[in-house]
Amino acid sequence: MSTSPKRWPKRASAGGALALACLLWSGVAAALVTLDLEDGATATVRIAIKDPTRIAVAGAPIQEIIGSSVQGEGNPAGTLRVTQDAGQGDAYLMPAEPSRAAPTSVFVVTEHATYTLLLVPTDIPADTVQIRDRRAAVARSAESGAHDRPYNREKSLFQILRAVASDTPTPEMQIEELHTPVVLWQEARFVHERRYTGHPRWTVDVYTLTNVSTASMVLDEREFVTGDVVAVALEQADLAPGQSAVVRVVRPAGVQP
Image 1 (cartoon, rainbow, N blue to C red):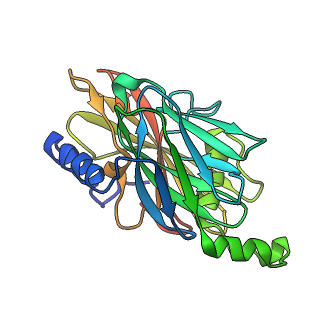
Image 2: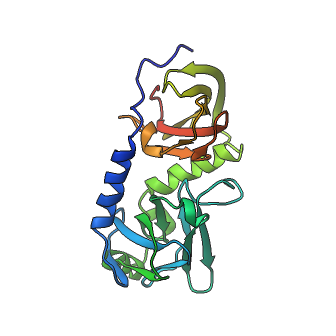
């Protein structure tokens, strides 16, 4: 397979990253947070750097918190620790390393809805973020079978990313070994290792990125987003000189990189 003709975006400058952080900060209230959201909506919230922040959805237990930064068995290098309270249906979020805490995003999944939270770690006391969803409350009160539930796009994306990361692809998926160099940045070596096809909705491309510079490199999922990319999962965000990380990129089925 030949090198992709599409150019990946340039790396964000430190100034751009700072501007983004300030933008996220500006829309956040400084008190107890109650969010009025609907399924698929996004909100920005502050979380404590040194203490767990409680996340709750009014009237609905949280089934899962998913995101490429969530630390777990399949992602030990994740920068966000998540603990779920099965009894209460709540979740607790905390940066894995307070000194390296950075803005990130997660999906909060309940039975009837998925909400996106843009998390901004801040030096504040532990607090509670409560999500209120009046439409989901109506849906919960209505009688509907599992086959009537709407398709959950975000959950589908993270299910396929998990399957690829744990090397347990679904039976219909095929794996194509490539090991093809791709032009990226001068300070990085980027190799297209393999491609997963056969899923009815998504194709997953797996890359290895190696820091070939003499300085540390901090990665951001947004640096790998082009017009046809729908999701990016980084195995590790901070790379020392010579260190490598796996980058998994999801595109619609049939779309070539």
